[in-house]
Length: 163
Image 1 (cartoon, rainbow, N blue to C red):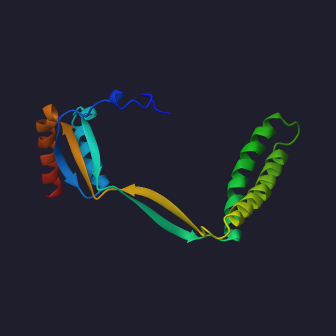
Image 2: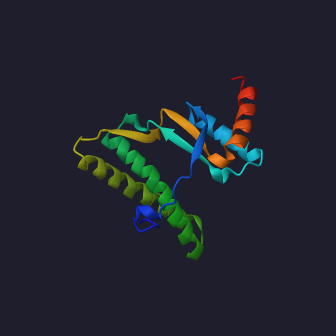
Image 3: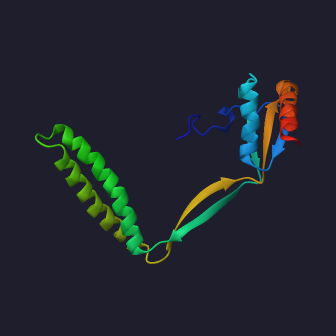
């Protein structure tokens, strides 16, 4: 759901700005913004813009029915632990019995559901992966009326880094 109701004219316009620095790594751009903040610069006038965006999917492991069941069992154990702890607050007697029951049932249900969900793919996706968005370069952009002050601070960072 959009806060502006999908009306593009309701989005704030980017003010005229100046690129203060360009970096190959996001962490370097973040370092400059952190330095600007440390120097008392009004960072609400700063943007980090990724140029040349692309998606990177790193394959982590081969997925088998057994591995899917194991991963389901692990997540089920955590969920069972949570429910068991909640039940132990209201159960009379020993607290550990509802916790143990919750974990055991969570492991069983998680393993069964993990195995079923993997089997339902019928081998179409037999791997686990993690996706992220990367950029070729990261520009630190500052509103034009604040650019000179930001460039002075960025210059000090370059001198510190020996650039």
